[in-house]
Each structure stands twice: as C-alpha cells, then as structure tokens.
Amino acid sequence: MPENLKPGEKLIVALDMKTLDEAALMVKKLGATVRVFKVGMGLFTSYGPDAVKMVHDKGAKVFLDLKFHDIPNTAAHAVRSAAKLGVFMMNVHAMGGSDMMASAAAAALEAAVDPDKKPILLGVTVLTSMDQASIGEIGVDRRIEEEVIALARLGKDSGLDGVVASPNETALIRQNLGKDFIIVTPGIRPAGTEKGDQKRIMTPADAVKAGADYIVVGRPIIEAKDPVEAAKKIIKEMES
Image (cartoon, rainbow, N blue to C red; front, top):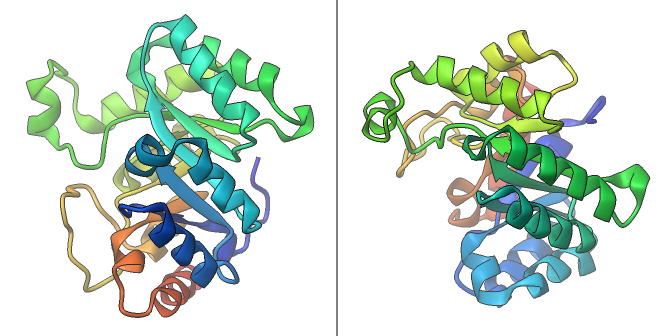
C-alpha cells in the first residue's frame, strides 16, 4: 500500500502513443521525473509484453491498464500472466462481479514474481468518459456516485487493493472505504487544458486533496511541447 508518497511518485503518465519507439522516447525523457508509466490497450495490442519490458528496462514501473472483464477463470488467467511480467499495477472491471474479482485477486497473489511485491490489483468502477446519461443507456439506474461506491465496496470485499475512479468520486470512496484502499484517478486535466473525451474531470491538486493516491495523466503531458516541463508543472500543482 502506498505510504508517504511524494507528489512525483503519485503521477502516472499514460503512454498513449502509436509506436513503441515513441513510447520509449517519452519514458527516456521523463525517466528522471516520473516513476510509473501506464501501458494501455493500444500499445499492448500492438507490442504485447515488449511494451512492459521496455519500461522496466528503463528502470520505471508499469501500470498495465487492460481492464480485464471476463468469466472468472479467464480473468484469473490474464491476471496471472500479467503478474508474471512483474507489473506494478493492473486492473479488472469491477462490473465483472465478485467471483471474477476474487479469482483475479487470488491469481495476482499466486503468480507474483515476489510475494512481498504483489502487483496492485484495481477495480475499474465507472469510466471517466461516462456521465449519468451514459450509465443509464446500459441499464444502471443508480446515480453515478452510488454506483461507484457500490462497485468499490464490492471490489474491496472481493480482495482488490483499490479502484480506478473519477476524481469526482474520490472523496466519497475515501470516506466510505478507508485510508488504506488505493484510489487511482484518471480524468485529470491541469488548469487551462482541453477536456478531450473526458466528462468527469478535476485538476491534479484537487484530486490529491480529495484523497487520490495516484493520478493518471496522458495527453496534457505526452502532447505538450515540453513533456518534462508539463510533468513538473503537474507535480508542482500536487505539491500545492
């Protein structure tokens, strides 16, 4: 569990680029400033475990963001395989249910390269690109806040270490699930940047103040003219 993390250790940069060479260059540029990088579905689908190895070879940690969501046995197999890659953090969809999440949690512990360094396993609650109308379309009648808390509680009861959730729900999760439950928040946009396809967003400083352990930032850093300066500015915002 994260304890006394410095602001720079709370920042996860999303490697949402098209080629492994571009991602490698970004990790090299940011390596002295950022310690954790997110490898998502785009990069992993193109390059597989080589994307994880690239980050590790440069001395950084990996948040493997593949959002596993399947029957319990299949999800557990995927988590087991990811754990053997030595990733720092990974996730499953909390909407997969308690059996799936419990199987995934057991698999993460079983397959950890080092039992004392089991990968952090998170449950994705409600995507930050969704709003009340969006979840209504898929048959969820509860308010977003209620749905997120319900999924977070189900994840904790199933053995997960924490959740991925919008910063808008971070304070509620912290209040209801306690200080040791890890919260990773995407949907982070520094003041003055574009929202993009995110709907439930917050600034880095406000997200940390609300109780986020880690924040995930992609485009505002990787598309900046000076990614290092952009990352340092976000870290400074968190320090404020």
